[in-house]
Image 1 (cartoon, rainbow, N blue to C red):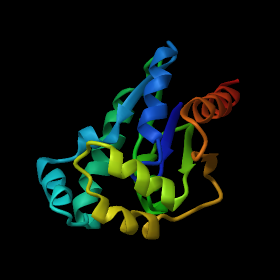
Image 2 (image 1 turned 60 degrees about the vertical axis):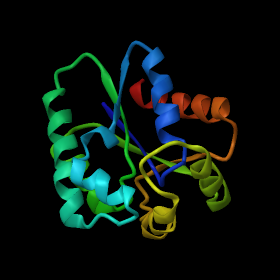
Image 3 (image 1 turned 30 degrees about the vertical axis):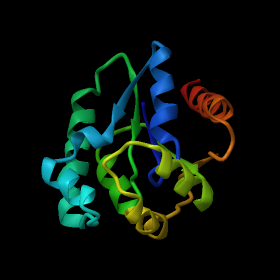
Image 4 (image 1 turned 90 degrees about the horizontal axis):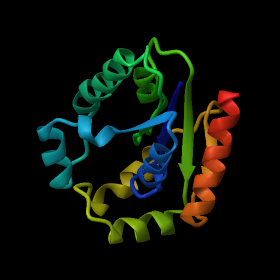
Length: 163
């Protein structure tokens, strides 16, 4: 199974996903590691990525996950996946994909982004917030709570899907 933890920068998706590595059934995949140097450079300079920039990145993640379909592990992928069309590319021809939306207040998102050391600049955060597309297939996790509470809620929902 594939569990995508999605949402704008600073929503906690990577922080929570990394905690799943402690459980022997899961492997965390950080989608940022699949970005091209050009994409990272562009974002670092405060420039938004176009669909043309994003599509190879999303396809690369999808191909990687397809290569793991016979693995004994379940994968937790932290990825912004802001639009439904992006989520369709990520899950293309993969079975058992679930998208967990890490929903956070704008205030918390800005506060968290100011505190972190990441190539993604805070100047692009409003664009991520504005472009996020909610869909009924998302499993929402409220991320304004403390990390432990968010992790336990996420873990509970993931484990229920496995049973």
